[in-house]
Length: 300
Image (cartoon, rainbow, N blue to C red):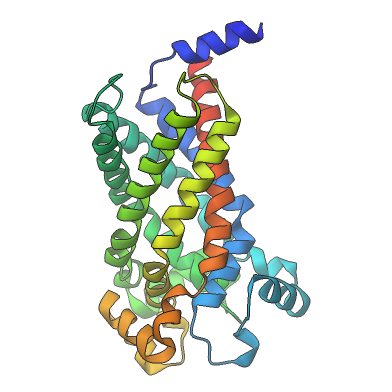
């Protein structure tokens, strides 16, 4: 029976169809973000230039201990509803676009020499589409994650931000997000596909391969794009800051200037450890979930 199942998996087309890829992507996205959310909350806190000493953390362990002891464990999950609402549809768009562009660019042709180009192009295209959908949800999430956030409901947060700052507040970080996530996704997908081929050249269903390849791909992509992520956090949380300079920060270069003036070169690595800690297991889980759901849906 096990042999038959393996043959069936290997015999499936590399492109399962847009609907299958979108459903698999949505389920993978929700799983990934929900599991790693507390670490993401810590990352946001560490990246914000806080004025209160109570909101300055020396590391991941220090942040976890202090937040859980002074605010309760629930504080680490604040804003997760926004992610769950946005992650499913955004990941459906992401993986659907990825597989569609990859197929169109010839990335599924066996033995093709341009596979890495096709996967990079597909990854970048997928990110442009999914980030346009996800960016407002990400803004809401980070507004709820910061120290002493006034928001306990994603809908209340969205309504308040819109009333006070307008629609542009949900997209002020979109150019920075694309500047960060397009190279991140291109690196992530390329590293993943290359490692997957190297570790599993026969294409048999191998959860361990998806975990290792996905985890390493996420760690590399997350580490190299941390400076851009720090800038994105400043832009997305500027409305909660009491600092006039941060509140009037208008874009990537403004954010970079503030980081450089206040914290020097090390400022660009704020939140590096929790970012890698988030992306490594979450990416491994995301790819494992995606490949599993894709295979399960196609097989049924």
